[in-house]
Image (cartoon, rainbow, N blue to C red; front, side, top):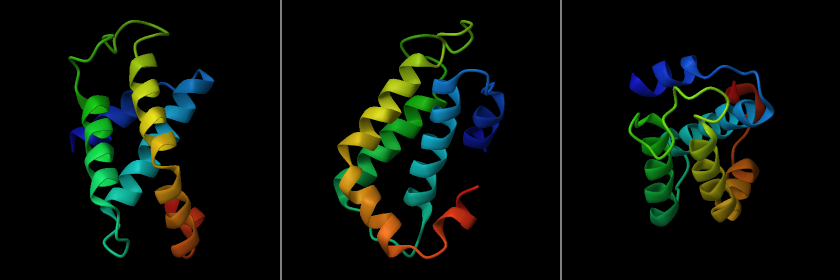
Amino acid sequence: KEFHEKLGKVPPTMEYLRNLVLDVKLLFRILTDEDFKLSRKAREDFIAALWYFVDSGDTIPDWIPLVGYWDDYKVVRYVKEKHSKEIKRYFEETKYFIANYF
């Protein structure tokens, strides 16, 4: 519930914010797909990144205009890049990914 509430509060006015929303949705989608066997380390990192996104007490408070989500973006992007092979494997093994992504 907190996850979806937080997503709804992110204003899609800046490119990095739009990318943050898409990246968070991607990590959440992969993490919750029961048909995909995600590696243990990727699962742990995805959970940590999503928790960081949801946590209001992170490094830069989210309420600060224009920069409040920058740290969330950097953490989520780091995890996404770190596990790019797992994400690529997900795209390769999952049918109709785009239709189910949004």
